[in-house]
Length: 106
Image (cartoon, rainbow, N blue to C red; front, side, top):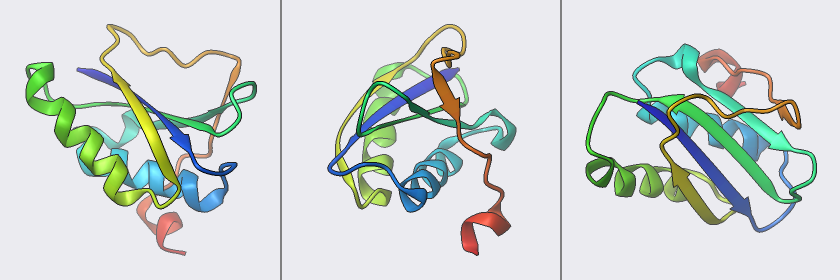
């Protein structure tokens, strides 16, 4: 199942925010390769994470997803969670370099 989490940050996103966004998605996904973190150019303090999880009722997973992002992200202000049928990353969004476990820890 596809998940799209849009997080509004308190301040402009930095490298640490992007790493924390990836870490939150990494803790939830069923496929590390599905994770894409992007920063839309025209949306200011927004980061987007898209990834897949095992199929489930949305109501059964939405709180877990929201809690994970708010717990991990220090610059977190608010979020919205969607379950698109397909990936929604557009050319307007700039994909952030995919982080592997070793890159997150360095």
